[in-house]
Length: 122
Length: 413
Ligand SMILES: Cc1cc2nc3c(=O)[nH]c(=O)nc-3n(C[C@H](O)[C@H](O)[C@H](O)COP(=O)(O)OP(=O)(O)OC[C@H]3O[C@@H](n4cnc5c(N)ncnc54)[C@H](O)[C@@H]3O)c2cc1C
Ligand code: SF4
Image (cartoon, rainbow over all chains, first blue to last red; front, side, top):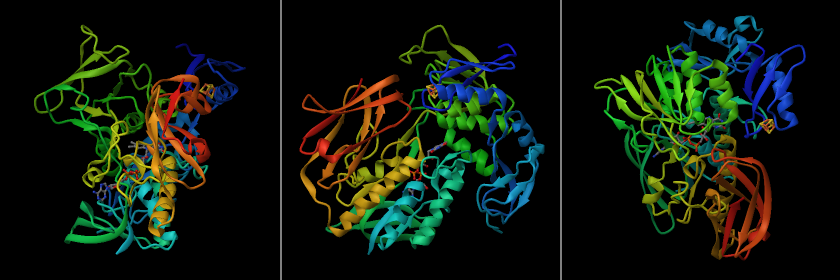
């Protein structure tokens, strides 16, 4: 694959067209079978974003791991950095659903939040 | 005596229990694990709730909505309670449970089974070779990684390209395995495009379509697998074998309803879904015994499963009131051309209202036409933009359309 062509799957319907994105000043989308695909392809070409799910270590809780996710989507290129920042992190129970676990993760201005309550257990 | 006992505390059981308790019935919910939420507690990715709440929640977040409802509605919940067996008496059921404190008996006027599904194993898909340690199902790996922070190995191979395998691949990649590979017999990933893109393609994880594992190699621990290419009928192509070094094998080769328990009670099992046959209110062939969620059929979206629990709750309500007039002979719903399975399998009531029909297509097709027919006449047709076997399809029909018929068939063309 050359630098200026990117292949992605359209996720707007179960058909999953395989789109070719020709990158440049004006992005061109190929392989889509309807307008939705073109729209999606343009967004994927310029700034793809993803919500990041992961877990962190938690002490004195029912499970050894606490599920966390980014509150909003972060740029795709930042995903691995976000995960890197979570590595080695340790929190302590109790935790409430929605608690901020890491602020402004990987300088994305997005917070990582807890996905569930975890009560303290001896 | 309880009005209804719900068995299984996953999303489907939670939804049915809270809905019934809201109607002022006395409800007990039995769950074998030490917390509620079922499978969803280990599904930490988002994508749940888009149909019901127009919001993309993670599994635990989605489960929490229904755990709260169960709390608010005053359902009596018993955790660490495994339902061992059930006996049908004249006008009620006797449930035998095993708990930390010993054996216990519970009586109920009606039952709702919501015990979910299990994963298929290597023997069901005929993978040969030795039996070393290091062979897992994808759901087990998801549990190990997300709840315990344990990786199954450093160089795993994932067999199967469905949603569970895709999701697990992303977890393993991000949690830092050294190498990872996915193989599957289809021509392209069978999971949702969204998962294929965001779990495999986003991270350039290597994959091989039209490939499967022929046998596992290794004495004590997995050392390698023998891969083989397959044709479009999934038959191995001789001479294409190659050895691939790995330290663990993760199988994501399908889910099957946990139907043994309802079968013991006398419920008829549909070999196509693997779950009990149900009517439009999710009542099995045993009066007063209902089934919901992945026990009935494997739902792709938990939202759909939960919506069907609401329908089942209406059915239980009618049953308890002695309301709802049943037909002398139910209308049989049968899968026809290019349809693998269909739910419900029969329409039993006279009532008004629309009926939801789910079917699994037998082929991949663009601009498909779906016909509902009886005795050679088409009663109603639907258009579907794009269908494929891995996506469950839904139809809504008014009762008038199929009323008075003996047997109704659903065809895809
Ligand atoms: C890996 C994976 C990823 C998924 N991803 C998505 C997704 O992205 N989006 C989406 O919408 N859906 C997704 N799903 C589907 C969703 O998880 C299921 O549809 C949903 O969990 C089904 O709910 P259930 O209540 O029928 O079954 P379950 O959640 O399996 O609950 C069954 C419960 O019954 C209990 N039980 C079983 N036997 C007994 C017994 N004898 N006595 C007492 N209790 C018992 C079990 O402990 C369990 O708690 C995914 C599923 C999996 C496996
Ligand atoms: S381009 Fe259109 S038809 Fe193709 S997957 Fe996207 S939404 Fe569906």
